[in-house]
Image (cartoon, rainbow, N blue to C red):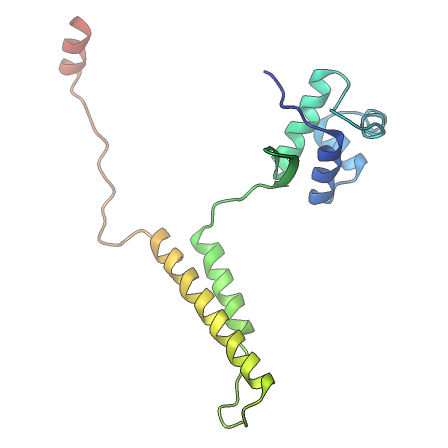
Length: 160
């Protein structure tokens, strides 16, 4: 398997994103700590034996990072798909942050900012509720039955 061209800077950045020490990365990848230190002590593409580089890269990817190589090499956290539970937690968090606005208070910049923040959070809640509704299976929807093909048809198509 050909490895992508990964730079030592990307390895260090990935490790930093995950909050991993060199010792922890060594343990996760099955590579010795001195090897990790030696590899990270130079600049440029990751060197050493190809299987060592692959172990380190795979461990970092398993930890949740994604190496990018578009216009400029980089690294980022891999997006995980949102679940109904994630969205429900997000909605609760947003609702807890909605500021109380005193409707009888005199107009002021502070009140205007509170109203703006409130409107923004309410909009985020509406968007999260929409996503959650899309993810929830409809009670009226029945799962599709798997397609079955009679054995006779399979045998007939093999004869042709």
